[in-house]
Amino acid sequence: MRRKLAAGNWKMNGTSAELDRLATLAERHSAAGCDVLICPPATLLSRAAEALSDSQIALGGQDCHTASTGAHTGDTSAEMLKDAGASHVILGHSERRADHGESDALVRAKSEAAISAGLIAVICLGESLEEREAGQTLEVIGTQLQGSLPDSASGETVVIAYEPVWAIGTGKVPSTEQIGEVHDFIRARLEERFGAETGGSFRILYGGSVKPGNAAEIFAVSNVDGALVGGASLKPQDFGPIIDALAASAG
Ligand code: PGA
Image 1 (cartoon, rainbow, N blue to C red):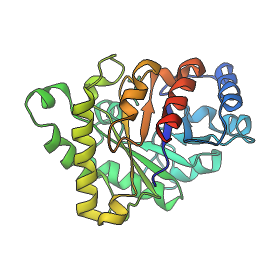
Image 2 (image 1 turned 90 degrees about the horizontal axis):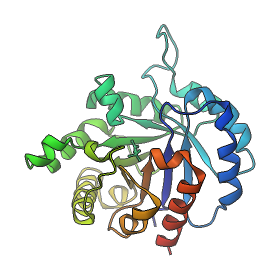
Image 3 (image 1 turned 45 degrees about the vertical axis):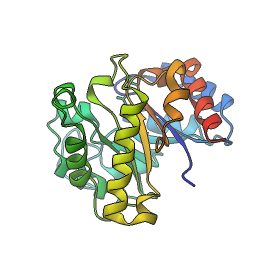
Image 4 (image 1 turned 180 degrees about the vertical axis):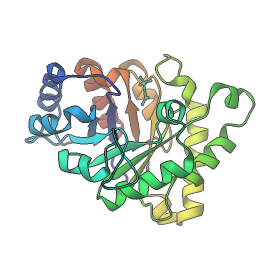
C-alpha cells in the first residue's frame, strides 16, 4: 500500500516570524493516517527542523543544484538541504521550469543528485492551458515524465506531483475526471517503464488550488496518493483540514 502524503510548498514565503505555524501544525498532526511534508524556503530549514524535532512532519527543500559543492553562487546542493534537516526536495516545479528555464534533462540530473544525497525527489509535471486546450495534455505529461525521471527512480526515492500549470494559484481546478485521466496515465507509464511492482510503488500527488473545500473529492480519485499544496499550506487552519481529508481517504 502506498502511504498518502500531504506536502506543503511555501514557495518564497515565510521568515522566522512564521515558524510558529509549524508548531501549530505539529500539535494538530499525529502520525496516524498519512505522511506530512513541509517545504519552507531554504533559509528556514534548520530552524524548522528544530521546531519539528519532536514531530512526525518531514521537511523538504524547493530546488537543488546538480553538483554537491562548487563554484555556483547562489545555489544550494542536495547535501546542504539534507544537512539543514530536509529529507525531500521539490524538483521541476512549473515556476522553476518557467522562471529559470529548467528542462526535463536538468530536472532529471537534479533528481539524480538528490537521490545520491539521500533525499526523496518530489518531481513536478504539468501542462499549460494552451497545451490542454490543444488536446496535448497526455503527450506533454508523458514527455516530461520520461525526461525528468532518472532510470534509478523507485517509489522509495521519488514522488510524482501532477500540477496543471493553469491550476496553480488560480483557484481553477480540473474536474475529477481530468485528474483521474492524468493520474491513471502516469501510473500506466510508470508500470511500463519500471515494471508493475516498482511502477505501482510511486506516490502520485495532485497539485493546483487544493483547498479544504475540494480536498475530499480530489482524494477520492483513483491513483491520487495525496497533494502538493501551495497557498493553502501557509495557513494551518487550511492545511490542517486538507491533511484530515487525506487521512480520512486512507481509511
Ligand atoms: P497552489 O500551488 O496550491 O497555491 O495552487 C500549488 C503548487 O504550486 O505546488
